[in-house]
Length: 108
Image (cartoon, rainbow, N blue to C red; front, side, top):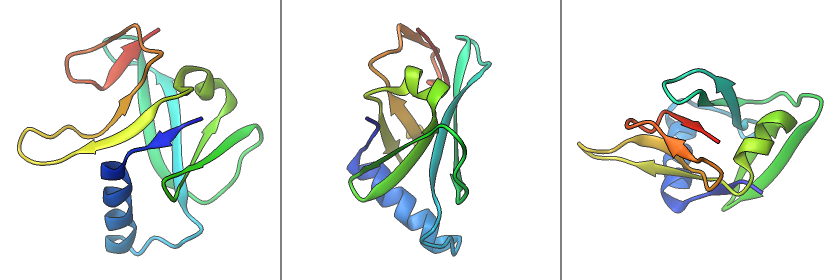
C-alpha cells in the first residue's frame, strides 16, 4: 500500500486546480537510479495506465506505481512540507536504510 498524508492531499488538490488538471489524472510515483544515495523518487501527474501498474487510493488521492518501484515503496507515505524551511513533497519510506541529507535519494 502507498499512503497519502493530509498535507500532500491538500497540495495535490491545489496543484490540480491551479494547473486545470482534469479528474482523470492521478499521481504516478516511481523509483529511478540516481542521487547521492543510489535511488531517487520521481513523481508526476499522469492519465495513462501502464502494464503492471499497482494502483492505490488513500485519503481520496489515486497513486499509481510500477511493480518494480513498488518493491521499494511498499508502506511509504507521501507528505508535503511548505514554508521557508519546507521540503516540498517528500516520502516517508520505512524501507530506506539511509537517505541523503536533502531527502531526494535513498538506499535500501
